[in-house]
Image (cartoon, rainbow, N blue to C red):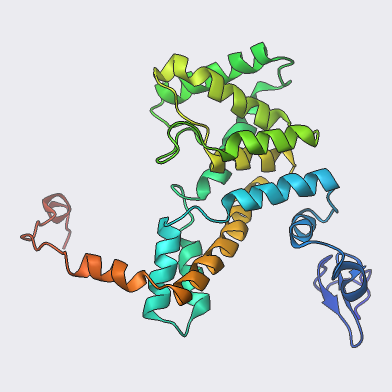
Length: 276
């Protein structure tokens, strides 16, 4: 095994192997981790290179559960359709679904965590009470509206009367003493935004997950990665159900047999900008 103090090489604190053993995060994989460390705990540990507390593990795993599956979303549909087209490529079907995790689905977790973190960094010292949090949240919502931007994590296309995941995750974080500044600001946005928008929108589950992950101190650029980790389990479930009770062919035929031919519509704007 390479001497870690030697110059050059490729240093890593993650997995390493020799002829008789495997180490991971400085632990013996077979003896210290397998059968002892849960997968959620290990995922947190791998990302931060510090072992989470029981409370941190509980909040983190609650986030994974919240994001694992949400029905026939585009990510689930494309996974099933890809499997229909290429049943020999389970990895392709899973990859297709994961590639659909973006700004409208799953990416909201990253967007919300980053938005809240940047707002807190710009504000300086966190507010000390709900009045202070509400004042900060009100300013942020007004700024977003004035700029013509949405507030990340606010609103849901199905759960218009409230996303059931949001209060539950907030309760779990509070029970574990991990209801930090990101969740505090997110909750305040939920309280004050009707004053600016003139209507009440729910704080969605993907958004509250981003706030909770940020309060756990997880790397902001990886927040979407954690959402994708959770959704991988859900997509495996979608594939398993597709194998037992297939619906992908019905989805395909419902589109294929109901297409409506229309005349071509040339893009005149781009045609006018063509250069020879």
